[in-house]
Structure formats: C-alpha cells, structure tokens
Image 1 (spheres, helix red, strand yellow):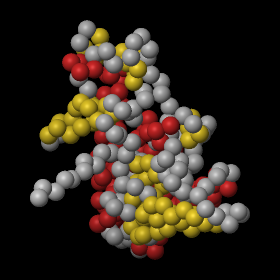
Image 2 (cartoon, rainbow, N blue to C red; image 1 turned 30 degrees about the vertical axis):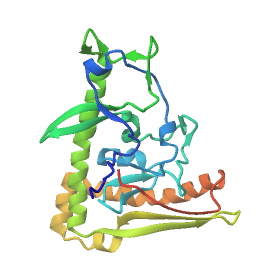
Image 3 (spheres, rainbow, N blue to C red; image 1 turned 180 degrees about the horizontal axis):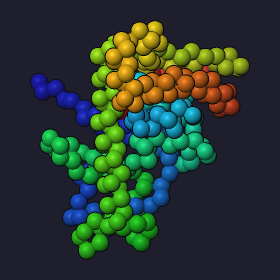
Image 4 (cartoon, rainbow, N blue to C red; image 1 turned 60 degrees about the vertical axis):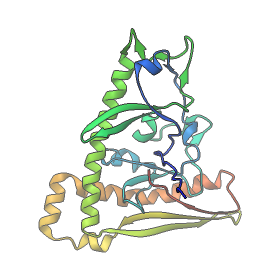
Length: 252
C-alpha cells in the first residue's frame, strides 16, 4: 500500500504557483486586505521587526523550530483584524504584507517568485495593477521582488539569532492562561520565551559578542513585549470568544 502524504504549505498559502508571463500574463493585482489573516493567532517575525512589533504584540518563539512569532490573540483568532482591515496604528508584520507573494527555493541560493493563486488579491479585466506588460514584469513585480529579497535576507539573520539562542539552551516552554470576566477560559500553548536566569548567567565574552551583533537588544525587546499579553486579554474581553478555548501557536 502506498502511503499518501499531504503537502504542507506555508501559513496562508493554499495554491502556490510560480509566477510566469506565460501563465499569468493577464493577471492583475488588486489592493486586497488582511482578511486572510483573521484566523491566525500568531505570525512569524524577523529580527528587524522586533522593535516595531514589541509595541503591539508579545514577541515569543515557536515551540517547534524556535522561530520568532508575534502573538495576535489568545484564542484561535487574530484580535487585530476586523473584516479586511488591520487595527489602525498597529504594526503589520512583513510576513502578512508579503502575501500573496513568496520566494520558492529552487536550488541552493536560487529563489523564484511565486504567488498564492487562491488569494483574493488577483483580478481579471482592467481592474488592479498589471503584473506583466509585453511579456515582461512590470514595476509592480520589481518592487515585490525587492521586498521578498529583503524579507529573505532578514529571515537569514533571524535563523542565525535563533540558532544562537538554541545553542545556549535559552528557550523554555511557556503558556498563557486567562479567564475573562464572563468566566470563559483561554489557554495559549506552543510557544517559548527566553529564560531570564540563564540569560543573566551568560559569560561576559558572549554578552559582548551578542551586544556587537545587536542580539542583546532583541532579547530585551522580547522581554518588554511580554507585557503586551495584558493588551491581548483586554482585546479578548471586547470580543466574543469560545466558551473554553485551548490553542497553540503554529510554525510557519
């Protein structure tokens, strides 16, 4: 008997296709919105986003690979998306701003641009911005390529930071439990935080090295962001939630 395996796509992506002039010559990009993220209670973050994200979300680390994520809700929903709109004044993670585009790894250090063909951002006819003109990518695609290259570079920086945390065994499992005034219980699982005691005990030489790399600031941003859990609880109080919710963060 042949075992059937299910392909797991990155968070949000349902029908990825390589972007080509031959297949998508008439495709146009509309403004779209953030409705695709309304059911995501966590979204990946790169290290260059910590300073902006920590003002609005808890910045923690996924239980699986340790990659940083922004916690967006204590239940299975994104408390910052209403319909198609992200909460005014709140930082939108680059992972969400990149959608419906993504880099696909074709070989070592070789990437091509792909799209989620199932995304509602694509229109036909004369609506939206053209992706190709006379068989060549338009400025829209050039700008998207630049954004995705920058995002990929930030991802590499983030991998190095996470590897260092894991090497020092600084990440510990954590959970967030809360009970609303209505009596409804919320329990968030599947994330890790930096162990403060182990962090404080790092040798001076390593602390200096991490300071020069900018990693100490990232860890302090992480610590400060944990106060945002109280803000998530306040948002949950103002929204209808399941009577008894146990949720986990997802790896991207």
